[in-house]
Image (cartoon, rainbow, N blue to C red; front, side):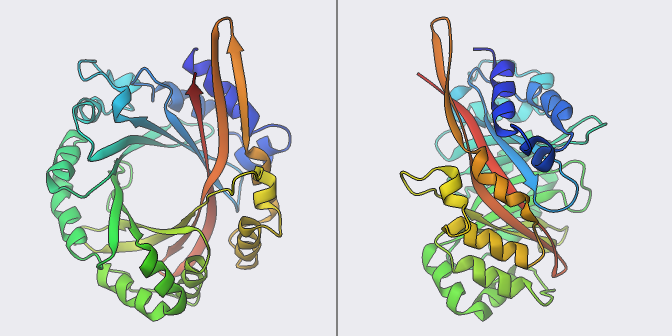
Length: 331
């Protein structure tokens, strides 16, 4: 089926009724342009709607392409590869050490969307890092990445890295996952978490960062940290901490996000911290799995809330964001 039509159906179902203005705001036209520039492969890309839970309703769009869906012989013109044709050509020829290539679109309701590019990886092989950064036009960022990687605490692994051309000075981003053992230790010993964060460059903790991250670690969800790496190879002033949700079998999205569910209790706490308002209560209703049939073609469209992320700048809390994962499964 036509990718643009499938995207419009996905968005319409996710943004149905009051959710359109309360969660998504007026970014749909810019998102439509961004999606059209993100279809380098034959398969429908994995879509992420990034939704702030505080402030003016809006969203950003992420489009993730899996390695096995690309033809290494394809041309990958700039207009369908987010302006990164060399990165897509490089990615199409890689092995199992890479997982997905992501275009992250900064959407402005009345402006032209701009893209960053990120690589989701299975390991931190330095040749892969160097190859990706060169293909993305930022080979100069490798030394920064390497210096940051060398500072990682034992038990942390890098799950993705990427470059943001529109963010001078904070254009290299790295996301890390502490192993399950460390997460459990952080929930009981936040001072060890402080030590590890200082080790990679965090200096300002403010009054809440450590306490909130301890509470995040003390949930059944997997904890991840996100950093913008400075020119010196240390983490910059903005830090993110996210939790990956996993909806229990048999529960609908709303069951999972009701105020007495695991995710609902967490979101209530985030509201008490002043990082979200009541719009989070609409997240459960964004979950769906709907079959679409046209003539002899049939596919399953799905969407669910996959992550919540908190952000701080120099230890001062900024906001929380929800990430909705959406996509298409062909028969």
